[in-house]
Image (cartoon, rainbow, N blue to C red):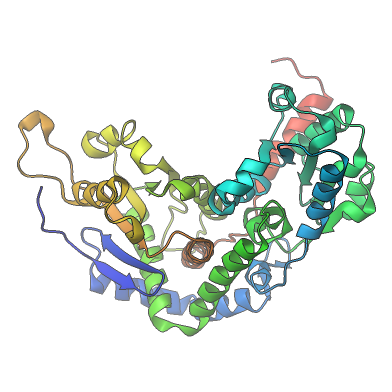
Length: 439
């Protein structure tokens, strides 16, 4: 393996070490992009976001997820009360908690349950998700459960999401105890229509976008140990402060964003794979996929210098991915980029060795292979090495990714907070059902 790595830039602080291997992204190019960011008033737009000004122009709303990282948490009292009630009635081996939700009401809670709930918690609670709209999912998840020891958490900002309402209706047919239902929503009036006890309704602000629900009670509630979610918020809060106050951190975020735009617009690399080599963080790629593709998957601004907006994002758990689509990454004809996430605390483990080795192979190739074994070595790679695997680090990393996405949206001249493409599917599906179209 060729050990000569072409490093474009690096960054290191108390949370992570970062190295980027991107061919041709020079300091002169960075300065060119940075000059454009000044023309676009990037600094003032960051201030507007963090200060709660209107940044979602099409819907005339602020985006409040940065301020939610500073809040006190208390919604776990609702879940604790139901858990205590069930345990008083009968000592169950496990309590079932079924979370009904889709999109941001699914990706965030799923990631945090996998990452933050301890093995002991997962031994005492059976967490399941119901996303809809296929009722086979409901039957398969509830077949072996007892309604008396099952709690439903219904997560929906609008409480009108078709898939969620379908699953809620079925769940209420299955369980006659409406007191075992908790609703988390920005529309409490709609939740009350389904007979959910007013004391079991947890609200949050409409200024929290669905893909930012991880900072709201939607993701907080299923985390049984309060200290874990508090630490997660703290990591997010520290990164938010750095976005405003730390020039080195902001420079790092800008370089991440600018290199994404460079690859997508000038190198014809419109696909990026995100690979986590940390088992607890195995769903990061799914979470980041929604964050980036819903935020940046917009029509181009005709006034922008960059007409390719968001990249196609896919990925998964690194060791598993190596046995499937890595063949294309190493020898295929597609032009791709890669983000690789690993932990320095695992630096003697196989997963860490795989992450570092793959970073080098993808970006530099190898010189000592036979003709039919040669690999491309032309993948632009970002390597994120986390110092710890914990709640604080996860909160910090997710916020870092939000910042990367926001800076890209400013450079592209697009609104990262609306999602009219998603809404179109909802509208026309209702029209299809109403008109009983045969296809």
